[in-house]
Image (tube, rainbow, N blue to C red; front, side):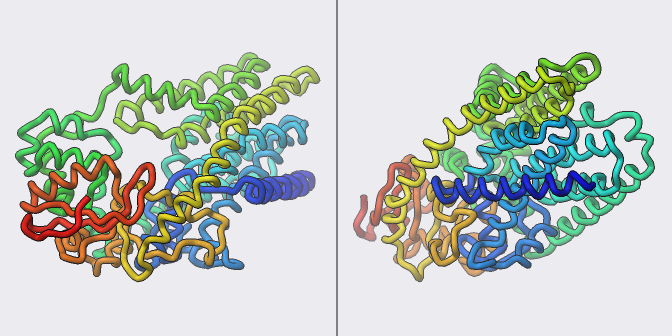
Length: 535
């Protein structure tokens, strides 16, 4: 690809410069704490008592790559890999879109405008979606002018997307299929051979990941993860609260269920696989499925967020130039996305704009790729870029400034934490995203030893903080020494009732520091006659 490679390299330099500029001027922070957790797992710090390449949400093979990177120049390999993948995805999008439209700089502008969210707030699901979008643009470029190098580029981008987040790759592929698959491609033996190789590699990678996950060191996590997710991710809690029989089967009070709803997963007697499955057996998994006005309203809110709206408008502005088959393909892809979004919402999975956003961006780019090469059609693409960039920057710059302004207060709270002790973080009380940025040097990150009460509480790397004992938090809570805990303000009354109901004790709190969302202190659930300072 004599022209594509230089174009890609120029675009790569532009996007690397964009990332470094945003980091220098505003700061880059992860969008969610999932990435922080995987970074800690890969490198063995924070909530990870030991390092592991099995990153849970991304492939084991990606974990090996991240661990091989280590700490290049003191930066976390996970952050370097993620931001590098983003820069490559954006450069490939701009290069292939420029080749398809014949408008390189206009394509670069559109891609940059739609890249604001992941550059300011990277998230692995979003970046995996961007890699998928780049792969499908490469497939279109291959169909326009068949070259093995372009086909292999599409395969590499697709495989990298699958390794980063297989679910979003599959979702993106289903939506992109009507826009990308054409009869000549389906008859191309070389394309079938490369696709077969990618699928074979993906299957091997998935089986290898699963074989490690099925090992004895992950048994506790595997047993708890799916039933836990039905409560914390898929909104099963209201159905259990409405079923006294389910609560009796699990041995729960109303207070217990409210604690589960707030991610208090630290007590196996409350949130272990046994009680969770007992409740699920009564109410049934099928009870989470359904579409009502409330869920549809939440989906509507998700799809009209400023940066999602930017991608929607970019799709519409590019789509107005399409006619005939091009328009029908875009409509088919849009219908597929809406149908999948409704299915996901019906399953009870809400508040996941990070899933829809990269697919909407992909639709905008594929629509732009199909725009006829006439002079006047450059106007909608340029207008789409300006509108998308304006909406996204207007949303993310204030957020970045607010995050930067809040850091001193959070760091002041952390300064009260005893360095040699394990500190328990309840849910998302502690803003990991702000404290462990993707491009921060290791010596600037907090060195506290942490245990997170969350989706991976039963994973071996986390339980290493308590000698592998899933009851470690409760044992510490009931001891005279107590547990060092970042607790939700709203959760403290529930903990008081939990202490009384479960252990016939009194919750005693020794405050150390306070933030708007949480209280940091030493918590003890002690016999009622054991008098210690209490808040």
